[in-house]
Image (cartoon, rainbow, N blue to C red):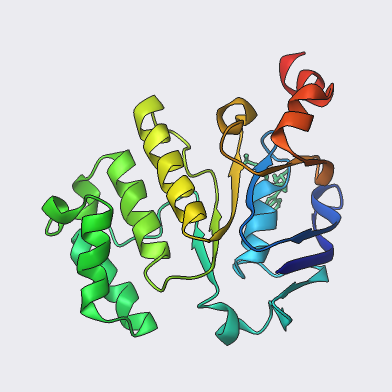
Length: 226
Ligand SMILES: Nc1ncnc2c1ncn2[C@@H]1O[C@H](COP(=O)(O)OP(=O)(O)OP(=O)(O)O)[C@@H](O)[C@H]1O
Protein backbone atom coordinates (compact mmCIF):
# COMPACT_ATOMS: atom_id res chain seq x y z
CA UNK A 1 0.00 0.00 0.00
CA UNK A 2 2.81 2.44 0.94
CA UNK A 3 6.24 2.19 -0.70
CA UNK A 4 8.96 4.36 0.80
CA UNK A 5 12.22 4.47 -1.17
CA UNK A 6 15.45 6.15 -0.09
CA UNK A 7 13.63 8.92 1.72
CA UNK A 8 16.09 11.52 2.98
CA UNK A 9 15.83 14.81 4.87
CA UNK A 10 19.03 16.16 6.32
CA UNK A 11 19.36 19.19 8.61
CA UNK A 12 22.80 20.68 9.20
CA UNK A 13 24.45 17.70 7.50
CA UNK A 14 24.22 15.42 10.54
CA UNK A 15 20.58 15.32 11.67
CA UNK A 16 17.23 14.31 10.23
CA UNK A 17 16.38 11.21 8.24
CA UNK A 18 19.00 9.29 6.26
CA UNK A 19 18.09 7.12 3.24
CA UNK A 20 15.13 5.15 4.52
CA UNK A 21 13.18 2.48 2.64
CA UNK A 22 10.28 0.27 3.72
CA UNK A 23 6.88 -0.95 2.57
CA UNK A 24 3.61 -0.94 4.47
CA UNK A 25 0.76 -3.35 3.77
CA UNK A 26 -2.89 -2.44 4.12
CA UNK A 27 -4.13 -2.92 7.68
CA UNK A 28 -0.78 -2.74 9.46
CA UNK A 29 -0.57 -0.94 12.80
CA UNK A 30 3.01 0.26 13.01
CA UNK A 31 4.69 1.85 16.00
CA UNK A 32 7.72 3.99 15.18
CA UNK A 33 9.89 4.07 18.25
CA UNK A 34 12.94 6.16 19.06
CA UNK A 35 14.59 8.63 21.38
CA UNK A 36 14.24 12.41 21.04
CA UNK A 37 15.73 13.55 17.75
CA UNK A 38 15.66 10.05 16.18
CA UNK A 39 13.80 11.32 13.12
CA UNK A 40 10.28 10.04 13.93
CA UNK A 41 8.47 13.34 13.36
CA UNK A 42 10.53 14.08 10.26
CA UNK A 43 9.38 10.76 8.76
CA UNK A 44 5.70 11.32 9.61
CA UNK A 45 5.81 14.94 8.40
CA UNK A 46 7.10 13.77 5.03
CA UNK A 47 4.48 11.00 4.84
CA UNK A 48 1.75 13.50 5.69
CA UNK A 49 2.97 15.95 3.03
CA UNK A 50 3.75 18.58 5.68
CA UNK A 51 7.49 18.50 4.81
CA UNK A 52 9.17 17.79 1.51
CA UNK A 53 12.05 15.29 1.51
CA UNK A 54 15.47 16.17 0.08
CA UNK A 55 15.33 13.01 -2.00
CA UNK A 56 13.56 9.68 -2.30
CA UNK A 57 9.94 8.84 -2.98
CA UNK A 58 6.71 7.72 -1.36
CA UNK A 59 4.13 5.93 -3.48
CA UNK A 60 0.71 5.11 -2.08
CA UNK A 61 -1.52 2.72 -4.04
CA UNK A 62 0.49 3.54 -7.16
CA UNK A 63 0.16 7.33 -6.73
CA UNK A 64 3.10 9.53 -5.83
CA UNK A 65 2.77 11.35 -2.53
CA UNK A 66 3.58 14.64 -4.27
CA UNK A 67 0.15 14.46 -5.92
CA UNK A 68 -1.35 16.42 -3.04
CA UNK A 69 -4.89 16.52 -4.36
CA UNK A 70 -5.05 12.74 -4.60
CA UNK A 71 -3.42 12.30 -1.20
CA UNK A 72 -5.47 14.71 0.85
CA UNK A 73 -8.28 12.16 1.22
CA UNK A 74 -5.96 9.22 1.63
CA UNK A 75 -4.07 10.39 4.71
CA UNK A 76 -5.23 11.70 8.07
CA UNK A 77 -2.43 13.28 10.12
CA UNK A 78 -2.47 14.04 13.83
CA UNK A 79 0.52 16.20 14.65
CA UNK A 80 2.04 16.37 18.11
CA UNK A 81 0.55 19.83 18.67
CA UNK A 82 -3.20 19.86 18.03
CA UNK A 83 -4.08 21.39 14.71
CA UNK A 84 -7.24 23.11 16.01
CA UNK A 85 -8.71 26.61 16.36
CA UNK A 86 -8.63 27.07 20.13
CA UNK A 87 -11.14 29.96 20.22
CA UNK A 88 -13.82 28.05 18.37
CA UNK A 89 -16.12 25.34 19.70
CA UNK A 90 -15.53 21.65 19.12
CA UNK A 91 -18.40 21.49 16.65
CA UNK A 92 -17.23 24.58 14.75
CA UNK A 93 -13.74 23.12 14.43
CA UNK A 94 -15.24 19.98 12.91
CA UNK A 95 -17.43 22.12 10.64
CA UNK A 96 -14.44 24.07 9.33
CA UNK A 97 -12.57 20.92 8.38
CA UNK A 98 -15.75 19.30 7.05
CA UNK A 99 -16.14 22.26 4.67
CA UNK A 100 -12.65 21.72 3.33
CA UNK A 101 -13.52 18.14 2.44
CA UNK A 102 -17.13 18.75 1.51
CA UNK A 103 -18.34 16.36 4.20
CA UNK A 104 -22.04 16.12 5.03
CA UNK A 105 -23.30 17.38 8.41
CA UNK A 106 -24.43 13.93 9.55
CA UNK A 107 -20.81 12.83 9.74
CA UNK A 108 -20.05 15.50 12.38
CA UNK A 109 -22.90 14.31 14.62
CA UNK A 110 -21.72 10.75 14.10
CA UNK A 111 -18.15 11.62 15.16
CA UNK A 112 -19.24 13.69 18.16
CA UNK A 113 -21.13 10.65 19.41
CA UNK A 114 -18.42 8.13 18.52
CA UNK A 115 -15.79 10.18 20.37
CA UNK A 116 -18.02 10.95 23.38
CA UNK A 117 -17.77 14.64 22.57
CA UNK A 118 -21.47 15.40 22.23
CA UNK A 119 -21.64 17.21 25.57
CA UNK A 120 -18.65 19.37 24.56
CA UNK A 121 -20.16 20.27 21.19
CA UNK A 122 -20.41 23.98 22.10
CA UNK A 123 -17.33 24.17 24.33
CA UNK A 124 -14.36 26.18 23.11
CA UNK A 125 -11.35 23.97 22.42
CA UNK A 126 -9.14 26.15 24.66
CA UNK A 127 -11.08 25.14 27.76
CA UNK A 128 -10.81 21.38 27.16
CA UNK A 129 -8.38 19.10 29.01
CA UNK A 130 -5.34 17.82 27.10
CA UNK A 131 -6.94 14.39 26.68
CA UNK A 132 -10.20 15.80 25.32
CA UNK A 133 -8.30 18.10 22.96
CA UNK A 134 -6.46 15.08 21.63
CA UNK A 135 -9.81 13.32 21.05
CA UNK A 136 -11.03 16.33 19.07
CA UNK A 137 -7.76 16.41 17.16
CA UNK A 138 -8.06 12.75 16.27
CA UNK A 139 -11.75 13.15 15.39
CA UNK A 140 -10.82 15.96 13.02
CA UNK A 141 -8.22 13.77 11.28
CA UNK A 142 -10.74 11.07 10.43
CA UNK A 143 -13.59 13.35 9.30
CA UNK A 144 -12.96 12.47 5.67
CA UNK A 145 -12.56 8.77 6.57
CA UNK A 146 -9.03 8.39 5.12
CA UNK A 147 -7.67 4.83 4.80
CA UNK A 148 -4.26 5.82 6.23
CA UNK A 149 -3.79 7.46 9.62
CA UNK A 150 -0.55 8.97 10.92
CA UNK A 151 -0.23 9.93 14.59
CA UNK A 152 2.79 11.80 15.94
CA UNK A 153 3.19 11.01 19.65
CA UNK A 154 -0.58 10.67 20.19
CA UNK A 155 -0.15 10.01 23.91
CA UNK A 156 2.50 12.63 24.63
CA UNK A 157 1.82 14.34 27.96
CA UNK A 158 -1.26 12.23 28.69
CA UNK A 159 -1.80 10.31 31.91
CA UNK A 160 -2.26 6.54 32.10
CA UNK A 161 -6.06 6.58 31.70
CA UNK A 162 -5.99 8.98 28.75
CA UNK A 163 -3.18 7.00 27.13
CA UNK A 164 -5.31 3.86 27.43
CA UNK A 165 -8.22 5.68 25.81
CA UNK A 166 -6.13 6.83 22.86
CA UNK A 167 -4.72 3.32 22.37
CA UNK A 168 -8.29 1.98 22.45
CA UNK A 169 -9.17 4.38 19.64
CA UNK A 170 -6.16 3.22 17.62
CA UNK A 171 -7.25 -0.38 18.13
CA UNK A 172 -10.77 0.46 16.94
CA UNK A 173 -9.44 2.22 13.81
CA UNK A 174 -7.27 -0.81 13.14
CA UNK A 175 -10.21 -3.19 13.52
CA UNK A 176 -12.15 -0.98 11.11
CA UNK A 177 -9.45 -1.67 8.50
CA UNK A 178 -7.32 1.48 8.68
CA UNK A 179 -3.58 1.41 8.06
CA UNK A 180 -1.89 3.22 10.93
CA UNK A 181 1.59 4.52 11.69
CA UNK A 182 2.23 6.24 15.01
CA UNK A 183 5.28 7.38 16.93
CA UNK A 184 6.11 6.83 20.57
CA UNK A 185 8.97 7.21 23.04
CA UNK A 186 7.80 4.28 25.12
CA UNK A 187 7.97 0.88 23.38
CA UNK A 188 6.80 -1.02 26.52
CA UNK A 189 3.38 0.61 26.17
CA UNK A 190 2.68 -0.69 22.68
CA UNK A 191 3.71 -4.33 23.11
CA UNK A 192 0.13 -5.53 22.73
CA UNK A 193 -1.01 -2.87 20.32
CA UNK A 194 1.28 -2.65 17.29
CA UNK A 195 1.46 -5.39 14.66
CA UNK A 196 4.91 -4.13 13.66
CA UNK A 197 7.57 -2.04 15.31
CA UNK A 198 10.17 0.13 13.63
CA UNK A 199 13.00 1.59 15.66
CA UNK A 200 14.61 4.79 14.43
CA UNK A 201 17.97 5.71 15.84
CA UNK A 202 19.88 8.79 14.75
CA UNK A 203 17.86 9.04 11.56
CA UNK A 204 18.11 5.39 10.52
CA UNK A 205 15.88 2.33 10.90
CA UNK A 206 17.78 -0.06 13.16
CA UNK A 207 14.93 -2.55 13.70
CA UNK A 208 11.85 -3.50 11.71
CA UNK A 209 9.81 -6.48 12.87
CA UNK A 210 7.27 -7.75 15.36
CA UNK A 211 7.13 -6.26 18.88
CA UNK A 212 7.79 -9.78 20.24
CA UNK A 213 11.03 -10.07 18.24
CA UNK A 214 12.08 -6.59 19.33
CA UNK A 215 11.66 -7.37 23.02
CA UNK A 216 13.52 -10.66 22.54
CA UNK A 217 16.43 -8.83 20.89
CA UNK A 218 19.21 -7.02 22.76
CA UNK A 219 18.24 -3.73 21.17
CA UNK A 220 15.63 -2.69 23.73
CA UNK A 221 18.16 -3.22 26.46
CA UNK A 222 20.84 -1.27 24.60
CA UNK A 223 18.61 1.66 23.69
CA UNK A 224 16.39 1.99 26.71
CA UNK A 225 17.73 0.22 29.74
CA UNK A 226 21.47 0.93 29.82
N1 LIG B 1 13.47 22.27 11.01
C1 LIG B 1 14.60 21.73 11.51
N2 LIG B 1 15.78 22.39 11.43
C2 LIG B 1 16.92 21.84 11.91
N3 LIG B 1 16.98 20.63 12.49
C3 LIG B 1 15.82 19.95 12.62
C4 LIG B 1 14.57 20.47 12.14
N4 LIG B 1 13.60 19.55 12.39
C5 LIG B 1 14.20 18.51 13.03
N5 LIG B 1 15.53 18.76 13.15
C6 LIG B 1 16.50 17.86 13.76
O1 LIG B 1 16.41 16.59 13.11
C7 LIG B 1 16.51 15.54 14.06
C8 LIG B 1 15.28 14.66 14.01
O2 LIG B 1 14.18 15.42 14.51
P1 LIG B 1 12.71 14.82 14.68
O3 LIG B 1 11.84 15.91 15.20
O4 LIG B 1 12.31 14.14 13.43
O5 LIG B 1 12.97 13.72 15.79
P2 LIG B 1 11.92 12.92 16.69
O6 LIG B 1 12.38 11.51 16.72
O7 LIG B 1 10.53 13.18 16.25
O8 LIG B 1 12.17 13.58 18.12
P3 LIG B 1 11.10 13.93 19.29
O9 LIG B 1 10.79 12.60 19.91
O10 LIG B 1 11.89 14.81 20.18
O11 LIG B 1 9.92 14.59 18.67
C9 LIG B 1 16.74 16.21 15.43
O12 LIG B 1 18.12 16.25 15.69
C10 LIG B 1 16.18 17.60 15.22
O13 LIG B 1 16.86 18.53 16.04
